[in-house]
Length: 205
Image (cartoon, rainbow, N blue to C red; front, side, top):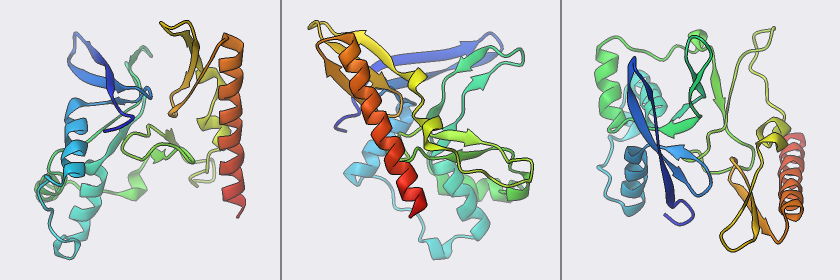
């Protein structure tokens, strides 16, 4: 999976719940090892064939779509301590699990939806995009976030490489490298500005 090499394994957990292990890709995305394996199976064509859509109950299809790729928001304890960063995971055999859960009485009810996932404009594919979770506005509508909220400058990280260069990275999958820290930061800011302008322009079309 070119461009998505595993560079770090991360484990989250506390005394009250079993820990969960994630792997961090070279773009800074956190995904479960099982999810990476699922993507590799899909790309290699070894994934078991799912039932044709026309055979699926609409309620099963709606739930299976939610389970196939799950975008989890930042996780906090009841006292506000961060337990885990945003990540992407999945349920194996999502259609089979959905059929079972529907028989158990589980349904997708849009009227009960309290948060909704929004993809990063012009960002990584959904399988690697942590995106952003939004809530309804006071009028009860789902707002369209400004692209600048996705490409937040405060999320830029600048580190010196072993070779002496400076590398600037952003969790939305952007990175630059330059001889100086300032140049690396400035180059990444330009990339972010370009993404923001492109996203705003596409919304106006």
